[in-house]
Length: 373
Image 1: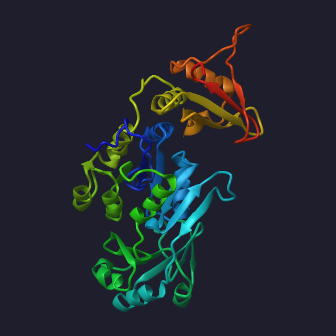
Image 2: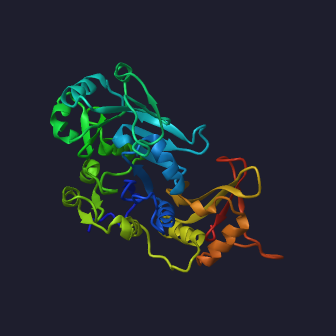
Image 3: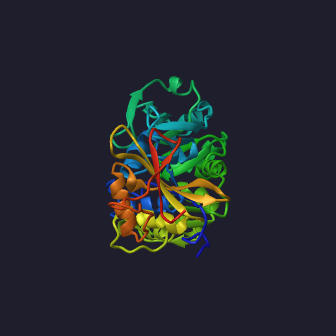
């Protein structure tokens, strides 16, 4: 077992989506969202890393409760930062483009019946001929093949019977080829894959290379699994994927990602509410004393809730408390007591919690110490 466990410092957790967090019927295994919240409350960074286009990632990220954070789409061709305050709910950090013409010409030469689709970021695809419903995420627009070759692209999808046998011929044009199945290949820029994009995110977040975990089930996850300090293959993954990983967990039907995620957080009383468990997790994983900071939106409910910790004589953000959004300050007090974390109270009257004002970081901020500070 790798040292990247619940006793570790901040970790980047790279998670494939299809076959890892959702099954073939697009169902999310029970308990997944709650466990992702706990991992985030422990101060770790969840980064979705998928072959899906941006249009296919966004609704799944919402269902997983990941409205904030980083994601890698299109097998590494696109890196985004999820942010509800952005006009579209995300900001594009980097789109890795390439000239699609050489590989499209080669594909037509070796497989004249090939269908070609070029990703349109955040919208869907431009295609040479129609694809079946569900084959591509997002909208489709049929255009001339010449138009598909005219502008730089982030990703190309190619499909034709037994197209996989032409992988080497297509790679010879200088692109990266990811095999999805025998009749389907994904094409990205030279050297671009999930690992390439994830390492750029890791560097930006200032997380050490030996504090990385990756979980996946597909051939397009091989680079990511090799990159991670701790790599985990799903139990249903092909043999080549399982042999490349440090560990193998259960299948998607067995919710195999859950024990991996659970290993990254302290064990909690299963009777605690989600909010109390997240507060307790944040308090147990923070390197110093903890305060809970909250900010209101336009109404009485909280727009943000975070755990901050004292490090080197200054307060720094430790982790979000996902279940603290959309509730009241009184609910935060109740959950802290449930977690066994009494807070300072006044000396008179009803002995209410001693919330203190916080300047900056929002229109109205308050903090609740979880000890006498």
